[in-house]
Length: 320
Length: 320
Image 1 (tube, each protein chain N blue to C red):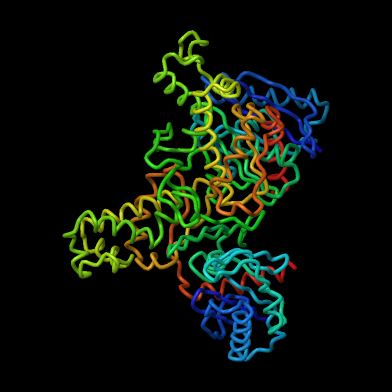
Image 2 (cartoon, each protein chain N blue to C red; image 1 turned 45 degrees about the vertical axis):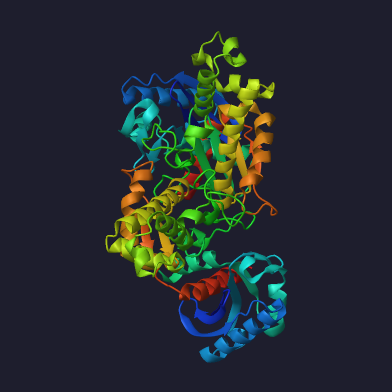
């Protein structure tokens, strides 16, 4: 039996047919074009799902569920998307609309949650009972896996790790609060800190290389310069790592999972990032001499969205 | 069938026989006198347990397990206390020593964990699947209940909420780190802030009432003065509440439980504290318009230690 996974992004919708072990048999993609009415976006999602099923050469009846990972919040009681800021969606009947095209059971969850679950099914945290996943991208998303399943909380608002307050009265956040983890541990945060550095140091080599245009600073530029030993870039990187280690300590001291998995764009910095976080974390731990969570890099990359969404659908249908 | 619960404190050891519903049938108490060798303390604990069993008029064989709540960390694989700072214990074979006096299965857990579990069995969070308990005392302890059971983490170091970093590079903590929740949300923190206020305001009415002795400031004094409308006391209280609300937001945004239960000495401030935290919390929430955890006061008071320890023993023995 198979499970369809949908990764609903701001620019693309990716659909894949996944087996019970979390392997993708076939996948298809279509542009989101989110500026359209949601009905059209969801119609295309359905066609994309059908295309993936055809490519996989399985029957529609063999697809037991459709799981959808969205960059927002959903209500699985009624199948509505509550918020999905990137797409401009509020209270969208995603399940009902999609079932007009492909009539299978539909379940919706947060994209970070499904990506974290994918890692625990088929990635770096495979088979672990408990893990916490952090996506370090434009923002910071989170997923909590407990007893091998995603924990989404009593009201569906759990694992918003990007919006824990890390710095009291700190940098204002897009969410309306200030000092959120996301303002210190995202690619956006790295870029912000590097631009501040550039402003204070107009002769900075990194800035010269970019034609004196601070608008061209990316997370990769900062990390590459830090890796090469540039002092100012290292300073930015170390501040980033300090805040990420503080966030990991919140995870360890609060939930104490078996593993913390780092994913998202910034995690492409690889071992340079991983080793820095592993070095810094013990400075913030309560029990430095006791075992604590392994810190690891995510393994599944872009496939995590499809695999995790499909596996979340599997869990729901098995629990239904 | 019955379960024995032991509340091991720095000054007293309390033992109680508890039924499967979490009601105490009978209890006994003995001084800890922690300066003695641990063997003597544990011998007295055993005698106290036997006294409680006799008072309850049940047979020793009807007591299925002994659960012990300790102000520290334990390893239930070998029955050792790993750390117990208040008692000066490190690597103490509590299970083996106790079984010399009363040979029943022994399980050990953190005192905040057992108190939080007690509330979820017989107190304010009774019957809820998920809750988080915060003890606001000399320090700040925490308990996480998930699926109706204590979650102590993959390495037994979960729910150390008192030692999450709340203020980066903040007030130095007794644990060796700085800026921990405990430094802002405990009775000790209220007293520290009030003493600072007293130093800056030698004419403060609260200080006059205490014979100009800042050493006599207690959490109760500060809260009572705030309740009466004293401006400086209100300022201290409001700073305390702000940090407690920030801590509650970490709990909501990370774990999203059904309820957050406030216990410990500071919670005796009652509705004055509860209403202040409930008012302040929405300022820090990510999703202000969605339902989130109820904030409530603990109900069981000192009985929570015995009840929770007994019920933790029950869970272990049923899982064994």
